[in-house]
Length: 257
Image 1 (cartoon, helix red, strand yellow):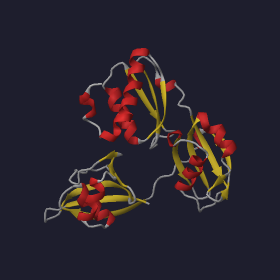
Image 2: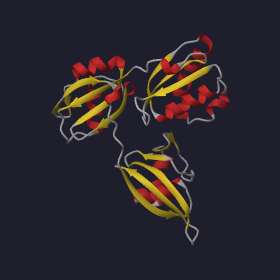
Image 3: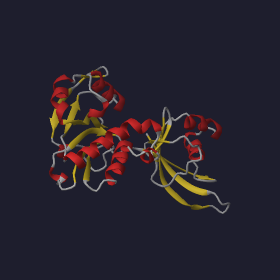
Image 4: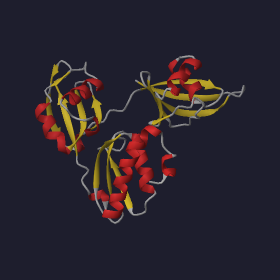
């Protein structure tokens, strides 16, 4: 492997980069078609970067709906028409849990059945039901065995993807001015934590910008960036709206509720 490739990635990402590189090489050289498990947005980004380097390979990402965060990738030789290849996705509808259950409850129940995280896609929690994207390979298993979420008894069925009802995330919007677009400055305003205290989790690798670990507090942010801190939640830079008379930058962000 060309060592220069690794320079684009965080050291923690090396194992996934190696796997993704092997998928790309096997498609290019052995004409293999590969369907991955669900990838998080950063893994999808890495795979796209590697696939773009090889003209003999094509890539398609599918998470069941256009705005999907977690997607399954289909990698194939350049001459294959990937749009006709089935993505192998199912929607598991879960009812009976009531309105008290949240994303973590559903995920915990699935992992408790011995299912690995990368076999589960986006989880859409509604008032009295949930729609969960899963791989075809485990849909029947979950449909038979998922009978309890947290302390609630539930019923399940597999429904067509056309009936999927995605949840649009609620954003708590806030506007403020900053001296610069530095990560530490904006994050301290969003979380109402002093700038000196927000630097520690960044340097400890507990912050991701667009799902990529960032350890530099002065990392510049831009409109559209999604920032997450372990234990603090996520926010998105919605708008960068010019300068005040005092030379500060107006920023509007949305905090995921």
